[in-house]
Length: 226
Image (tube, rainbow, N blue to C red; front, side, top):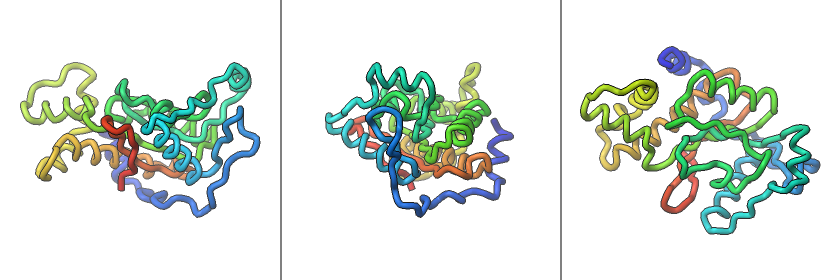
């Protein structure tokens, strides 16, 4: 993944999508099932945050789970957002954002670490499914971050495939080590923002708006990262 990191950091398109499209939010009028899908990035983001507020306040609707919709989705899917999230069992995107079948394209790796399979999956959503929004979702008390910090503190060898996670998260950890406060929290935020910027920098994703967010395990709320 080191070669991908260098490619991302030297890409000239970093920040090209930093501002959301100026188009006013709209929603589809003929989307699958009874739950209309947003068709613009601002509307998609608003739908995700609205759903998260329902989840955090115990008002989830659990939409788009009917047998009728399952039959419709068997023919085609039209998700409105790509979620690049962590594998943590406490952060399932469909529940966190109160969405249902056919709503989200979810790609999950420990610590939201990128590799070619992840990038290809995002590209499939953006280019083939015409998804307007990519949201990178980090979360507090991330195990992959904790493992990275433990390695940096002790220098102990990292076994097997876990080395990829440590290699990818370590730059964010090193950049934030001297900051006051919670090193793990600073690392998670910095790494999540880097993943967002790396995706923004890739010319394969210029048609989508890319944002980063943090999930709070205690409150259940998602907040956007700067």
